Amino acid sequence: QVQLVESGGGLVQAGGSLRLSCAASGRTFSSYKMGWYRQAPGKEREFVAAIRWSGSTTYYADSVKGRFTISGDNAKNTVYLQMNSLKPEDTAVYYCAARDTPVGGYNYWGTGTKVTVSS
Image (cartoon, rainbow, N blue to C red; front, side):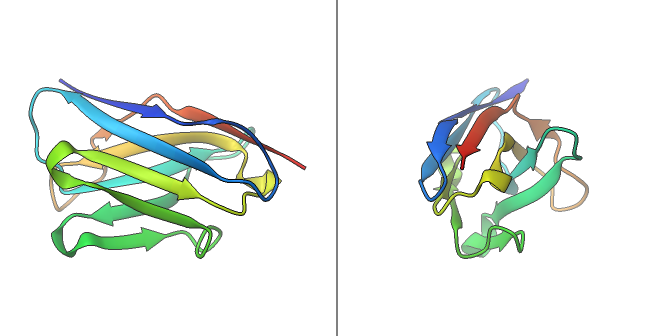
């Protein structure tokens, strides 16, 4: 079994920064891609950012481009999300996800870490 554990959430004022971390534990696995999603109250879960280890290719939602940066360590199955210039609309529970195949969706999910941005 693989567990993803997020950390780094909290309360921050608008314009501030937070860094989220996600580490995998449990059985050994080799992730193909890791990413971050978020879910705001009353809204559906949405994609935020992802990193494909091959070529270190990164992907971002338009709403966070230029403000958020995803990075990580493939060998450790660890991924980070540096969030700058935070806005109240970034308030959500942030989930880490991982997949170990090049096709299909994410097959491992964390339980989430809450980020609250006050205005």
